[in-house]
Image 1 (cartoon, rainbow over the protein chains, first blue to last red):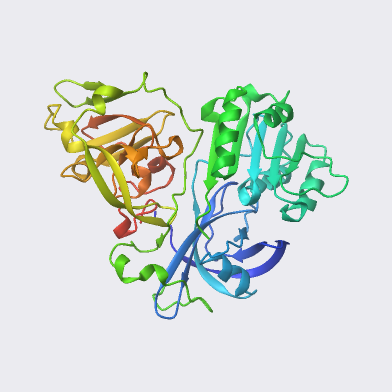
Image 2 (cartoon, each protein chain N blue to C red):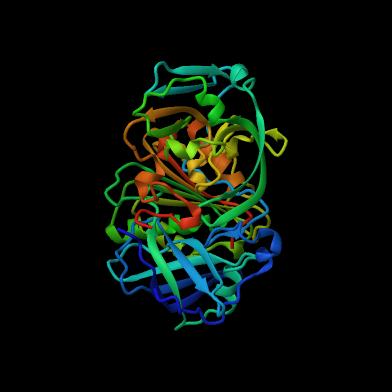
Length: 245
Length: 207
């Protein structure tokens, strides 16, 4: 079964941070997705030149033929500046998916969930948290999320709301470059000591971990989680480098 | 989709289609100058004293090299273009290692051997038809760009099969098993194409 290209229509655009926007897409033949999967976009210029990129799906599976992508504008990028600067509601582009079947959270999972994100690495993890909330899962879950400054935090208000549902989710944030007055979270890059503090008592021996962010963060966190007792095969990673866009 | 579809307002960057790269960038790929890292789990760190490389399966007898033995095999320098299914292509990557042709001189293949599965520290596997590994098309590399291959890029050693999407170039490779029948590896079992030829844009199952 091939994954066919279909014409996606932009039905909503939301500014998440000064450099990050979310795009709601309607897809006529969307087969549904699982939290953590991607969609491929293909853009075609007048002369036939094409560019493709993969983007993580931010929305929970709903059964509706609709997905939401969250895209960071990569300076010097080819596709993300186009999405940010040109695309408006009603535009169309080709899309296909869902892609990927490993970095995926299943709603019947009972293992304590450990999510660690850096920057826009939060996107596939947000699909998992949104899915977890929609299905009413209440196994313990911890999100450790690293951003540069408070204005770079993606989904900030929604994360605060999710953390107050009383369903076993704990959200811990670190701001690595600049912190607002009264900031009570961490103030440095994620390191082994931070992981140990945040995960103490989180049932790490039985945990299922998903880590997504830039390579240096993923290296430190994946190694750190294994050092804290999370079995290596239960640490799933996704990385993005400075390239892309 | 109809070939006539045009994305409103999309122009694209054309720097990459400069003369030097014509015919070298597979469809749907863009050229990058850095070296993105992708992997599904933690980076393994195997000590060289523990490291071995084994060829087994449909052979008269399996063979295993220790690190010092392996890196004393006849080495070659390779300059190749590589393409990742996540859409980046990197031109003129420079590697040092040993070709699969040289390695397979040390074993006697059974006539039925038609496929190989490469396996790695950390449990990764990927399948490659045997003909894709022969005639200078594939090698096991331990140096990249004049330096020991970094762990996040697959060091101490990785398989490199540059004419297929780069997930076939198994990082942290420790062995090759020769089989009569094809056996999908890790990504091939998660919806990615079984062979992964970038020029035919075989990204996902069914492409």
